[in-house]
Image (tube, rainbow, N blue to C red; front, side):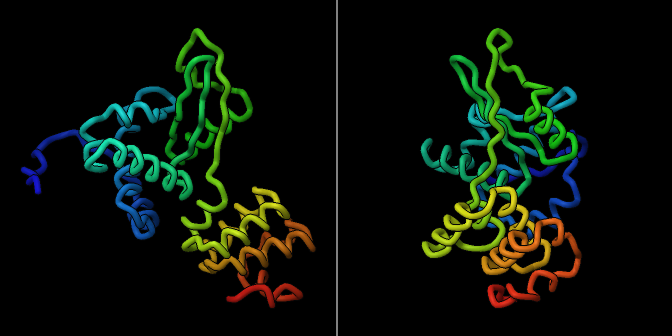
Length: 229
């Protein structure tokens, strides 16, 4: 093991939001996600400009950081991909894919009000990060699939759960599923049956009826048998 000589008396500091320690650190469950999250927090604070973002190619080019992700090149790339996907699925990072005529790039923003505004501006066509000013670009804002969202927020993905999630995709919109998962997490009801119960009730009564704070609102009535609470 390589020893660490200690922090210098004076040196450049970075800001780590308190929510990282109180909300993210307890639930991050892989070393790759932890390393990637901390790295992005550090690198993005070195950026200049109103809308800082980090390119995947920049991370890959950082040989010191990449060397800590695995013994072989393939392992390091896979660990980076896994860490980024998990950070996006968890909501730590926001992800945008930008493609020009002869190139493409993945961009990552920290999920802050400024980062959210930047991604919203991209979606609305109000702002485009031009990595190559000579070529117009196509921008795709991609979000993690529901299988990743489930695994990151609810629990392990088994074949039966994967089949159930596939069925949900055929019945409900992606936005509804994402919101139902978010509500299940907020109310510490991390079960697929709870998510399904929310969706069924929205379908029957309308989504607007469910914006109440009492978690038992989701488990009473004709759909209570579908939910284990």
